[in-house]
Image 1 (cartoon, helix red, strand yellow):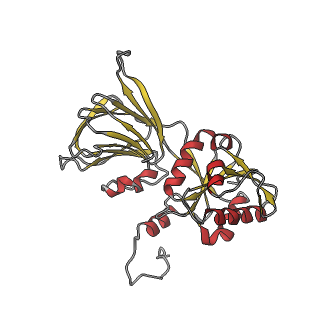
Image 2: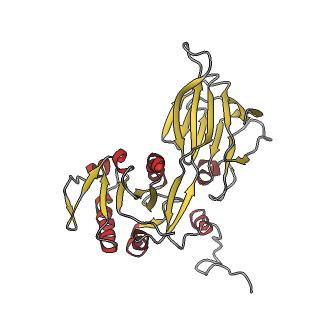
Image 3: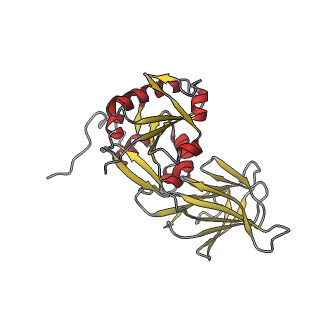
Amino acid sequence: MTLKINKIGIFGKPNNNNLADIIEKVFFVIKNSNPKIKIYIEESTAKYCSIEDNHVVLDTKVNIETINTLKDSIDLAIVLGGDGTLLGIARQVASTGVKVLGINQGKLGFTTDLDVDALDKNLSPLIQGKGIIEKRDMLDVSIMRKTDKTKIPSSIFNAPAFNDAVVSRGAISHMVELDVFINNTYLQTIRGDGLIVCTPTGSTAYALSVHGPILHPKLEALTLVPVAPQALSSRPIVLPIDVETKIIIKNGRGTALHCDMQTIAELQDNDIILIKRSKFPVFLLHPKNYDYFSVLRRKLNWSSNPILAGLPDPKLPK
C-alpha cells in the first residue's frame, strides 16, 4: 500500500542526550527523499532540544506545534524512543488515524522498527510511501463506581490501552480478589497479585513475563493473564477482541489500575472495571521487509544456539 505523505510530525523521548542530533538526521533523510514534505516538531520535544519556532535545520524552518494540533494535521508521526514512548504517542493520535513509525532508542523495541544507524537506508522508502501499514487494536478502559449521588455505577475514569490494562495489588503486600465476567457471564474469581488484560501487541510486554501466550498482531483477540494467582489452576485465557470484560474489585485496599503503565487510577471495593475494544485502532508503518517472526527471534533471542550463530535462517526444502 502506498501512503501519501505531505506532513510529518516528529516526537521524541525526553532525557535523551542525542535527541537533537537524531532529529537533524531525520530532517536530512526526509528532505532528501521529498523536499516538499512539511516537517513539524512536537512542542515538548523541541523545548527539550532547545529548538525554537522558525529555527533553521538544514536550511529548513522548523514548525513547532502541540500534539493536540499535530494529530489533526499530520499524515505520519515519527517517534524517536523506545516502546514506551511510541505507546504514549500512539494512544494520543489514534483517534485521527495518523500512521505511526518508530525509530528505536530504547531496549527491546518490539514496535519501533528502525535503528538510528541505518536511517539513510531504511527511512527514505517509507517517506516515499513504500511501506506496510498494519492495524493494531487498542482497548477502551473505564472504571465504574457508585457515588453518593448515583445509585448505579457511573464512569469516573477512562483511558485507552495499546498494550494492556493491569489491575495490581500496588505497594501493599496482600492478595487482591477479583470477580471476572465476560459479556456479563461469570468466568472466575482470581485471588493473587493481579490481572493483566492485554492486546496482541501487549502479549510481548508484561504479560509475557508472567507466562502469558504470544499473540500474533493480526489476531483479533485479547488475553486475560493472572499475576501470581493463589490457585495453580488459574491459567491465561485467550478471548475474542470484541467481548466486554468486567472486573469487580472485591478486596481493593491499595489496588490500582494501570493502562500501558502510563495512566494510573486508584481502586476501591466494588469498583467495576469495564474493558472493551476501542473504536480507534493504531496504524503502524513498517518497512516492506517487515517480518513479525524475525522480530520475535531477534528481540527474544530465539535460535541463539552457538552452532547456528551467524548462519542464515533455515529454508523449507523443495
